[in-house]
Length: 373
Picture 1 (cartoon, helix red, strand yellow):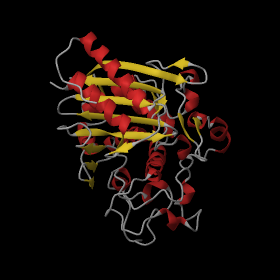
Picture 2: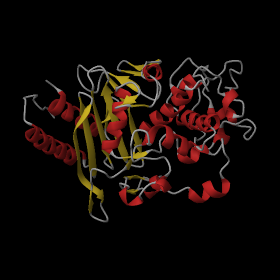
Picture 3: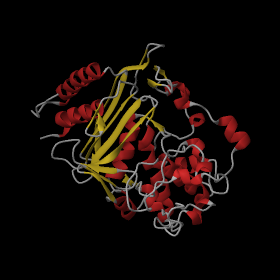
Picture 4: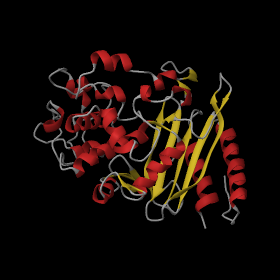
């Protein structure tokens, strides 16, 4: 949907945004949509549209929170980098020295798998055997652990892998000496003044946005398991430094669009939000530096990617998320100090150039209205 970049006053821009976003929602059959825009390093627009819950006929509000899926990887990585800044861990360190068991591709047993490889999806690990338990990759627990690896050598190719980030989250727990959700909350979330968490039991469930998508049988509907409590499992069966995937370090953050925009500003400012520094400038730049080429338009960094095909003429840094029906995106340009956040809680996904159509159309619409000269 083309939008001219004619200069409008604030109210006219917001009205134009509302018109275009609701049209995009209609065309993509979206249930609800939450967005936030950052310009010159500050939030200039936050809005929500559509339904939070169809069955209860609840409208989506600005402070409602979504499970944002894989954008969560950057929260886990940010927490890890606080430990790097303290000198407690190095990104080139062998994962086997940190996780409590040997992490080696059996086809290449002499090649160490490093944190940097996990962070950039170049470890040769894969999700084919699952990623909700470390047993799938632990040779002490699973004689078929080799199924968790590709046939190529670690560090030589890119393959997106959720298991790697559940390992990263476990390492954060082991190195920090704090349970994963508590460490991320105290080192990243609270210092930024965000209302967010990996642990659903630490949040007000009335603010959860119902997600709508296909279940394992292909039946479309509400997906309440996105916010399933793991309280009893944590209380009775949690093994510190091993059960961490319960919190889904790879995809389990729950947060509003506005608070995700605040978090994005911190990364835009290379680790600092206002007077609060979360990670060092050095670590932040490292996190946003490309490690591997994915395709002609994409380079993967560490829990973020740089893309050139999202907004014409702009190099954007960030990540998308998709799970249980949510389609989310957080992308920014640190040099030009703008960024855009979007989240929808359900729509039939149609992909184009690596993004769902609604992700691309919403981001480009907001860019053309609020950012383009």
